Length: 496
Image 1 (tube, helix red, strand yellow):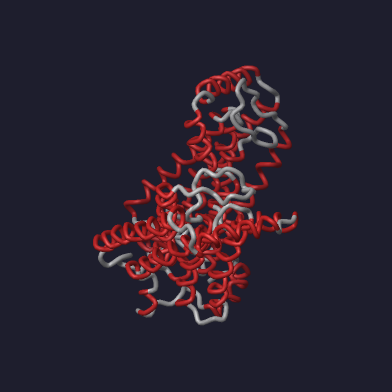
Image 2: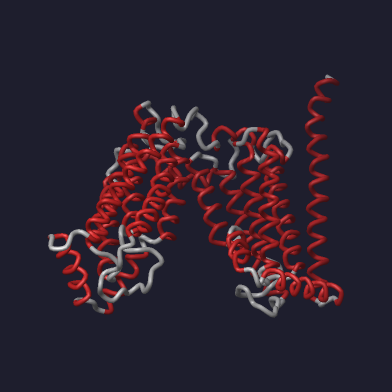
């Protein structure tokens, strides 16, 4: 009986020890933030002077170097709301698909709390942003605490706690280190870009640590109350969910023969580039007197003669569906969902290679062909690339075709035909808008079709994105069960 009591008490003792240590850390972060808040609020002289001296020093160091500013802006965007909200939203949807509603609720509560704390405290303190000699960038609102520092600490910390169990033990410490470095870099970029004082960033980190600690501690208490073991935070919030939230636990090899696949893709890329180069040079410089030359002259003029303000506005919006930001956004939503539903990296690899290959083929062929834009008013102004082939149209063709190929083979529901329709409608709409705006000839559209057809065909033959479907792979949640996701949040607070 004594041995049984000792066995029972040992986990309780470990939990109590970890709880006390955790509470001390949370309390320390909270007290530190409160003290810093008071010093900032009452403009304590030494802190005020140190903040302004650091702002001036960073401004003199960074402002003259434009490449450095570009790098800093790219890093700081990783702590911005658009990126963090996308990461948390995709993670929540993926967890719901994998039926891990408790973890999804944890991310929602933690993320929403961070979003509430930032603007409310900024309004309470009312601190103005730094004023520097050479402004580098601009940020709206007040300065204390740094929203990027707070948001990145909370979001990346919460994602790390949720997904640590999906990592092999040897990768957990490196993952924690990478997340810590990323959060530190985001905070430093806010100081270097002149939009926050040092104390703003320190305040954001302290507040983020306190809030993340509170939510993690509450989650651990919830597990303890339901008789579940409470492991160290270095093992994540729910270690037993590791296999369920692992991206592709049953996939042994993304590609069976990766070396030969790489060789085939490289050879294929060269062949596709050769086809684009030959067709592009012909329609650009050697097609005079042919039907293609007549088409390239008549169509841009026909569109230019029929321009109206409403159509011009519509063409601008539709053209945006093919620009880099829209293509990247759709890819960053589609790929994680495919990974969550079918638990395979190969379809994701198919989409990634489709977009990377399209971009490289477009840039290379545009550089060597150097075709002028149509001889009409170019509504988008001077562009850095030449006319052949159309990058907007080619990217739209490759993305939506790749998505249709993946979805059509993986479900028998009626909405798979929607992806097939979009694979036609989206490129045609983008092509029409680009020609209407005087940015491309009809044969540029043909070049985009040639690029998309050859490259997607090559990838389908080499990567075989739907090979697992023929082996009996099924999604984590069947298409007919999607409505069940609505009940997952309601079950989150109940005992299993």
